[in-house]
Length: 165
Length: 110
Image (cartoon, each protein chain N blue to C red):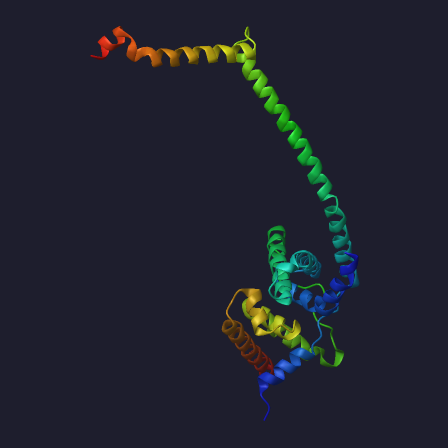
């Protein structure tokens, strides 16, 4: 492990924040998302030799762990299903843009889960459509179209909000 | 005129996810180290369990063989049993070999 210690640190430094954001889609609490990232990352690190694309495999491991964690949590807290009640913000809040940022976060939560995860992987994870397709087990075209639909929907939600104001 | 979707993409990209907590990195490190130390004695454990299983299997085979031999004829030893079997199988073979030359047997065949 000594030889690999820098390796896993690099992976976490580069992808940790985005992975946490990714895992929060299935977790009501930040602590649960952290548990999912820990579990998924450990699994990835021990079995990464079998991966075709390591980044896609990392997201796949964290996704599986987060979904499992979410299921366990839902069973435990049957009345606390709403993932919108997060206990800390998923993004760094910039004061001058906080209002707009809050609108975007709200619009992101309105997206269907399959579109939202594609947006998170593409924008904050930096994955290519091919990697997203491999992570989710879907075709490249499906990944790209989900992304396009998601952005169009976000645009529409934000326009409506601006119109309401 | 700029594409609103491109603008939105740029806006989303400018939002920074919350930083990865140091405590979580420490937890990952601890778990990796723990699992590593847990895994290291496996070859020794495997060898030990293989030796124990082999010895146990050998004992069971001996017990089954000795027990089976004793159980079939408690008064006779294993050597006597083998000799008895050889004698009986030998006499049967001999009687079959001479049967065609036996007049009584030939009469029966007619």
